[in-house]
Image 1 (cartoon, rainbow, N blue to C red):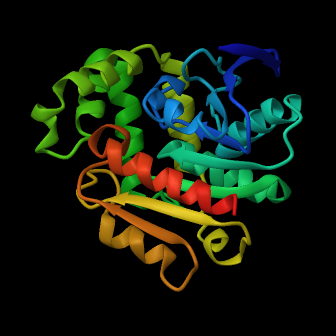
Image 2 (cartoon, rainbow, N blue to C red; image 1 turned 45 degrees about the vertical axis):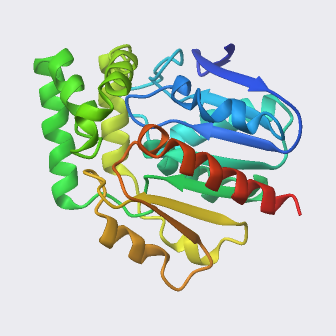
Length: 262
């Protein structure tokens, strides 16, 4: 991983390969290691930049709240330093929220957008209340709260079958500092609805959803792209498609990216 200083804090990223640039943005309680299966697949054709978002991985915190705009600006700082003019953003869960904020702030840099187990919708009242409860829980029992959070992202039938992957994800999540967890929850809670981008943005877009996602209701979220030119891809499992639907995810990513090169 390489590092830059941004607002007196360290940003961490990796930059590998040659070709059109793909930027990978991880989800909440994750870091850039979550892409370890996908990166080698992409490197055969693409330059791949992986970024640890604010308060996650090796990237430090810059405040009590990390808004999605704050995170998008940190991403821009890295891409500007690398002299990148056009990129495809791929964001998992919270990384998708950051990718949408980036697309709104810097539309001229967008060559394409993929949201993976994510949504352009803002938090519902119930979801905001759940985030407040999650903040309280992690303050009271950090380890237990994180372990439960990670396991609950997988579909029920995969929680036994993918125990090794869940344990790995838990270990990575436990490296996330408390301040980073709270700042991200507060930022996600405050994020605005960006469904309009599905309708008005001109760059190619793809949305990947899991039918058994415990976090995002599939039927509700697929409606956001009805009547748009957004490509909808449906998996049969949960919120962690990079583990639960690894082969199909890689295939769909390459198909989408390869189309952009034609």
